[in-house]
Length: 229
Image (cartoon, rainbow, N blue to C red):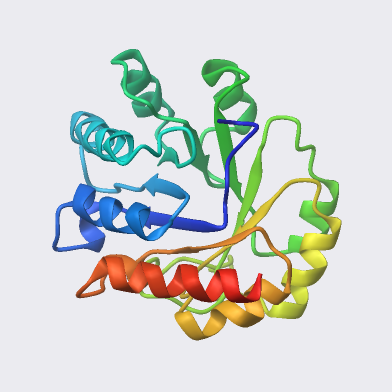
C-alpha cells in the first residue's frame, strides 16, 4: 500500500465528529469513492480505537477496497502496532509536529506502511522545501479556512491562526518531493480552485461526517474533484 496509495479524497473521522457510527460514515464515503481514511480519536481508549479500526477495515474489505483504500490512525503508533498485531489491516499512521517522530514511526512500522506528516503552518514553504522526506510518504497541509472541527488548526505561538491560500498551495506542490493533501474547512465550492493548484487531494471532516446524508455529500465532493483535477 505504501507505494500505491491515493490521496485524492481523504476522510478524517472520529466518534466526536459524527452522531452516526464511525464505520457507517466510512462505508458511505468509500462507496462514494473516497480513497483514504484516517481514524482520529482524541478521547477514546486504545482498545476502543483498535475496535473502530477493526470495524472500518472489515467494511473496506467487504466493499472490495482493501488494496485501493488506505486506512491509517492519527498519532497513535502504539494503537497501529497493536491493531496490526491483531491481524487488522491498518496501513500506517498520520502524525503531527508534536507527535512521535517520523523516524521512530518508520523504525517500528517497517518499510511497507504509510507515514503521513502534518506540515507546520509557520515557514511552510521553507519547511517543505528542505525537509528530509526519507521516512515520510505525504504531507498534510491545513487549514485552508478556520474550522471548528479543529480549533487549533493553524494556531501559532502568538495566538494567531494562519490559513493557506491557493497560490501558496500551488507553489508548495511545485517544490514538494512527496504528495500533498490539503484540508481544514474545505467545502464543495473550494474544490475547483483547490484542484487547480495540482495538489494530490483534499481532506475533509465535517463536510462528510456532519452531513445528513454522508454518501451524497461524499459523492458531490468526488464528482467535483474529478471534474476539475
